[in-house]
Length: 416
Image (cartoon, rainbow, N blue to C red; front, side, top):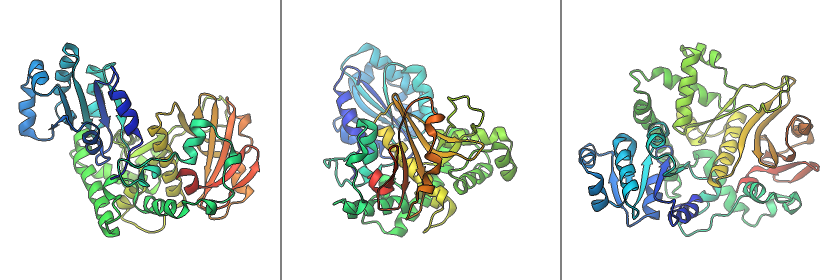
């Protein structure tokens, strides 16, 4: 069992007056049920996925809900949205209640939540595990903040960084976890060390199949999944690239409007991150096209039916996905972008905090040179806030300082 960073925050909020209704949403198999049953062991667990029981729960009045289920976990509640109205009614009539609503469809669940429970609930996205979470073995294990998180939380100085990842006393453990993340992604179900590689790959293939057959059909009521499946494969092959809807549409035989709609489905079902282009500055040199990144590298490998080596773009996506998850876990007040200019300057990942930006260039190489950090130079002339620091992340074990604002770090050291 892996510990979850967000657990402590939820426990704290559950003890407050505002912690009456929690909504956990996220992709299937990210551990929503496991976490909620661990946090609230005395709550009744109600599976709304069961069509027989679902009908019976619908018949309960607000008074019956309060009498029979004053504290309950409702799993897959988006399957019967009318129950959200029942929970709202109980909330408005009685104080001594608590509910946890779970759903694997962000769109179907949150659409109803925003209609009925706006201002009455706390919403949490549960994503695949982060690398610090993957390093834990039980609910009681301490989750260490990564170097990245320490920069975001405390704006630590680069002076405290190790000159080489090889000097980290926990290097072997961190590399072992990174290897798993690199090969299989970060879904909790396959984090068990006793599973064989083939068992993990089989799980991922079944996950992709279930996603297509259940989640997407529920979300979009598709009669024909073939165009969507083609886009899934196209995006897996082109993760980390700019989104050109017209070109994609020509490749898979649909309109650009359909491409945008399908990509939105990927995003709201927690399979991809659409990274908007930074455009606060009106500089005409900027390219405004968004980029897409798959959220889990194991899923990419399953979609493409491949294993072993990965491309540079896949490496970029798995690093950005990890930073994205770590930021979400921290409830950090950030905006996330990529930046590209017509004359070739490119920043893979730009994290905007209230007081400035962190910029990231990502390379899969095992030996970096100052030339690799060229796109990080001169950013202060473009950005509208101070550049707090720039990082070149790679597989190079050595830490290098190219100037007072640009540092090269090993990616496993930085994210573990």
